[in-house]
Length: 254
Image (cartoon, rainbow, N blue to C red; front, side, top):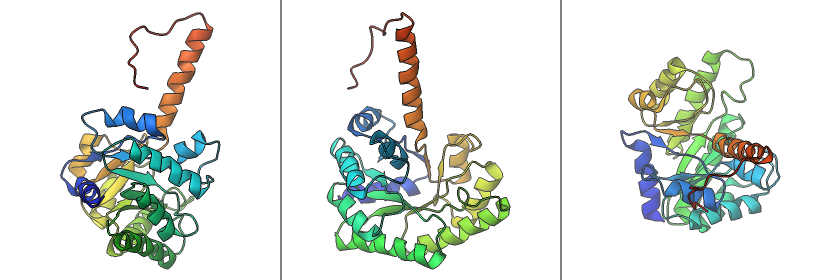
């Protein structure tokens, strides 16, 4: 476990951009883990919730811990989990996650007061230390996704302030989800630090090669990968309903 934490931390600080293609169950984790370019596995909380019939952020903590535990058991790679806002007790949630093999996580601040959010980060880091393994926290700030209609410059400044505070409290990286272009990415990296910013692959986000040159640490895809899979499923079903057949050379990924 300790070695996997170290590996995950190192992947965030390496010069190469860490790309994680988010998964939601054991079989999607195995399919991604088999690819030679995969260095770590990241879960998508939205996708796990949807798989269990819940809206994003509404799945009970015990179901989430069980789900990410099955994913961790399906691969030898480091697994970082999306743990929503940490639930009622972020330190205890992370302790349970470590117990099922998780070595890192996203935990979102939902734009709660900064002192409260910093306290959550500290509780998470303390939980990893108490378990003797450490923990690679990709601390998420919702400065953009919950920023409403305020000017972009205010969201950038808020993300930088929160990001620096979370790093000081022990976070490995700062996750700033949002649909913005290169100028904002550059401002975030300049303010938070090189190899310290994590993004999600929304349409306006620059391509991975460019993000690497800008000094971004990590790029994930959240629920978008499950949407790709579900669209493929619907497309296959429509093809079958219209008299088609499935390909004969389907790989036995399951």
